[in-house]
Length: 624
Image (tube, rainbow, N blue to C red):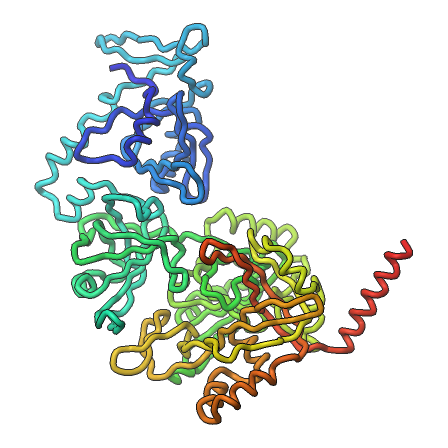
């Protein structure tokens, strides 16, 4: 049979979202259009001359594209694929996981209506010496499938299936799905992943009874991560089976939208494995090293992540490296190593990154030895804190790569060598917290009234908006949830452990004690109106005048009246606030969330100068 573009390839793919080993795959030859790199992968548009669909090659196939095996306007035969919905758009996306090259680039895009002599694109048979008929398109011979593949996939499976281990049989008989292609509405799938983090088995007790649970973080060869959780029988079944850094085939799990409150990896979904799920170690096959996948945040945009739950990835040029310091941890009195590095990027901002434990002594020492060369570092999974306004800290799961082979790193190196090293750089935290003279100077840029924020319901829709306001705390509701129980090590929320003590999900351990940290809402007023602000621990301590532990002790020892009096004393005092404004959806309704990011007392001398300057500007504008 002559080979050419399959006239109904796209409609066939749309009708059958994934391949099935139990049925024969129809001929799917398509033209590659708009081929371009996107990160470590290549995207393109698959066309059969009648219809088109957006598509992406799996990252493991990138070497074939860069070697020239696949060309823009060329033809490929799709042998394995998955079709997924794009959640934010009403369209499909095709993930190609296996293919064959059929033809190099054609002269132009093929269109079905152009298959006549009048159009100049004629399909004509070409007789070979052995009598076999091939197709020729504008002088390009399209070889038949039989010339390229001597055995079908079914023959290979039949010959090898009996001699394989269970994990190898799973690899041959079931197609491996990349993690990025999974969604809750997908049917049968199999993934090949490495265990990059294994949690402890822990017990829980709730209204439905007692049980046990543990979770793992899984990474595939593309660097995509997902969190998998197992409860009760599944936890007991798989706890010993899952070993850190080993590679497994996993199937028959379920997916759901990830709970943002407990999200530990960059994935919109999380996986649950039950006692019927299948997990097989890929012990007899060549393992893989997951590609570290970064989602870099520019240094000047880190402000919106301060004290938040989301972890960030950064890339920067190392400007300074400190010696190793020994820090005594309050929770267990243990001494741990710490090293600070200062990095900068093209936003002309710098930030301090604290490396802890092994990262401080290993990678940190390596950076110190080469500090005079100003290396570029890419760091994954950093916590953003508000020490000195804004700072970054590594966690046990953080990854540091020195001089990575990434486009962002190469661009940054070029910028730094050409102009960055001579450029005046500013510390990113200087505009976010009190500094000199109680920090009031940084609170006067972009000053607005509350009505400016509350009158614009779409403010903060695309990204957080930042403003400074001078206002009063007019009311603090005494019967609201004022604080939460927090881990003394990482400050994340803890839950009751079985027996005694508290369980920290972030540190994966029990502690006998915990601390209280503020998380509350206050009503704020100025001359233009009022609004409700969300306040977190550091800012709340400045407003209330004591820690959450101290306020709780006051309430329990001196009674409710002393507690309410303490809250009342914190009202009607003027403050300068730096706030972020975002939109959040609640009951299908978008509402503004205004969060205090920094607070400072009013310096009346500076305030007077600010007002006089505004009056002068008003006079000048009237004269003009």
